[in-house]
Length: 190
Image (spheres, rainbow, N blue to C red):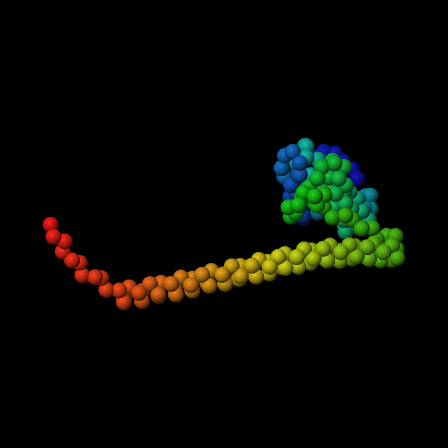
């Protein structure tokens, strides 16, 4: 991976991601990936990325055997560059404990189908564990919500019973008032 301030013509940005840095200042870090270009004299493809917000923007260049490999290695190059800063970033994540680089890791496939199968199995196993953890949390939240609903129903039942008692007491008062006839007042001689 070449690093530096190249002065070559700008290329079309095909993807970008804005990350938030975790730590002292909550600043935005923008990572842009440019369109891969074929290098005819060198017989390889080159892809570049730029990170803005860490320091002065620099263009980083990565090569590959074809445009896809160049692009994938460029994404990995951006991840490694961010990782080397020692800083933590978030993307669509609100939990600082889960902060990382915000850029996915490149999984090499050139080591053969057995290696690729083992890596894919590990990813699937960890993904399943993560989804199971999320499901467990959601089930716990549902159970807590159900308990709160039961408690509110009990409180509502108590309030309805108290209201009914007040209605009965008010009706009794009303009945007593209808029966009550004031005594005629006697005149007190002066």
